[in-house]
Length: 538
Image 1: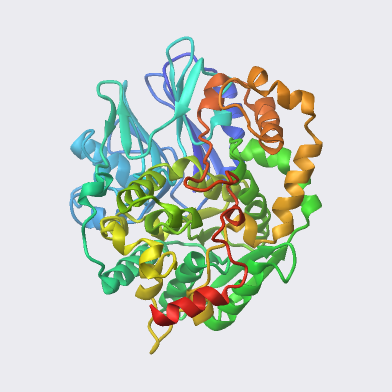
Image 2: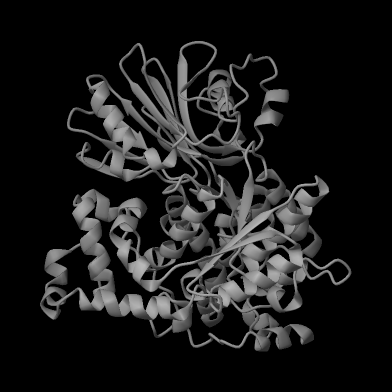
């Protein structure tokens, strides 16, 4: 929805703050504004207009002295207005405004009342509170300069050269000067012993439908990212049904190296089945390599799998915004929730499997969510993720691990999710797509993309450089030439130790080949028909 920068403390020059905020102008191309409070604190905002296009400009003032900036969407804002905030007078129709009113009514104890994807800062005199959504769908960084001023920003690039130390704001927390960090999101499923519920296929289907319905909230056109894999195809199918009830059409978008890329073929089939207005985007390997430098500046990471997958998503996002779409639904989270990655098949025990799903959900903000936000917002496009809805997670994450394990269903990953939407009388998807084997996004756009990318990066790093990798990059030392190449680019833009420490490299467990590509797993089968066959007997 936007990007913001908040500086708590006096003495920062207004023109410099505007310049820092403009580093995130891609996040909010529609309008920009800045407010300096009576106490000298500064709130700056770059807006992407999605809800309340005309009066929802930020920063927004509450009923008295409190001001706020917000990035994201509050899906239950109307419910809050109609109930616990019905005695409040609102200045706008923006979903964001409920945040400042909740603060005025409840003090710090309100963040868990929000249902949405958000990062925000509220300032009231010298008091302030910053918060981030439960899973970290929306990015947020914080830091402190050498004069003790606190900084909060949607992207690291706005504060990295201003702060002596900075870090990623932890999801599911709020922060105040009085309390420090407080973990407000404490779901039962974070203790693996609580994951003991039986599968309720109808409830899974109901909650994912409700999660998708919420994320259709918009005053601008909405599209779907349709890779042709299970997760994006399901969200597309649900969205198409819901919009059809309102007489609206749905635009779907896919990307590949060419028309025969695995994802492109499957996406075409799904789009035809659903009757969406489908757009197929292509990019070349040369184009992908050409934008790596700019991409890493946007992503603020050197994680290999994030960069591989973000490249096609970057091109796709650009094409989507050029067609006038500002919001898309995406399928992130399903593989973590249901243990869908191929390496999950090798889990030593049900307990290990369950713990890994929990950890992957908790760490999503370091990888897939970072990629989904920054590669789309690089072009002013907002991605929404139904699979990470709080109510849906409360159901899906508490399912007993044995009932999620692929080996329980002859090796079929995410079986219960597939089965929940296997409704022959009114099918959500073609059978061959509903039971298609997992392809990671960076693989599905065309296998040549990863292979050529590895070759190119290796050609850019000498053996001598690799030998000195631990000396050059003592923290999170790159283990391959590809990783080294990305790290060099990252270091050029973000040389601070604090910057390097915001990145968490992901390496799949329980498999010999440590490359994050799904094809590195022995279970990868190019012929999807084998998965379809196993579903018949399940």
